[in-house]
Amino acid sequence: MFSQTRADQGQTAWDEATIIDYHTLLEDPLRTLHKLSVALELSPVSEEQLRNAASVVKRDMRHHKSE
Image 1 (spheres, rainbow, N blue to C red):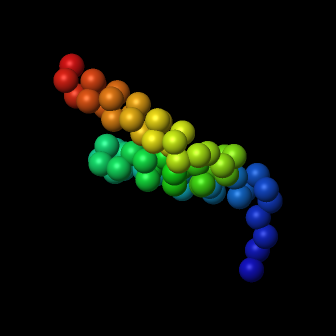
Image 2 (cartoon, one colour):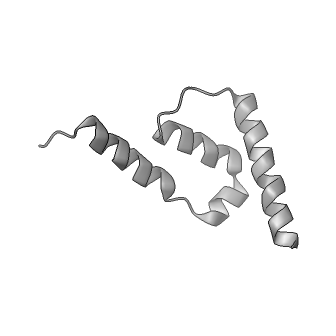
């Protein structure tokens, strides 16, 4: 068994967090944003904040699709 430094753990979390399927983000932005915040060890966010962010993602994605 090996131990990881804090930097290694952070990099691992970042790598895992950045492997997000585009379609997953479109289909379920709320869940995807929640997983990102946990993986990146961000300070806890309220469900309302996640819902607001998810609605922005949906709006922006629809906007880009229509262009």
